[in-house]
Image (tube, helix red, strand yellow):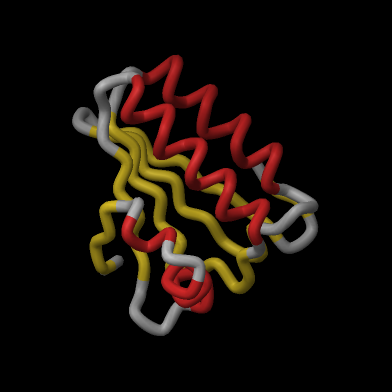
Length: 109
C-alpha cells in the first residue's frame, strides 16, 4: 500500500507478519492502513509487528488505527508489537497521549 507520503511494506515470516510503515500515518491514510492491518490479521492468522520507526508524523486518527489493530489482535488471541526508535515523533505522541501504555513496544533494529 502506497500513497503520496505514505508506504506500508509487508513481510511474512512463519511466526508473524511485519508491517513497516513509512511516511505520515495521518487522517489521509489511517483508514486504508487500518483496513490493510485488519485484512492481514484475518487472512494470515499470525501475530503482527508494526514498525513505526520511519513514521514522520502521526495524528489521532493514526493512533486510533493502531489502537483498533491492537484490540483486534487481542480479540483474536494474538499479539501486536510496535517497533520504534527512541527519537521517533510517533512514539512521542503515543507517550503524550498515554497510549504508550496500551501497546507492547520493542526497539526497531
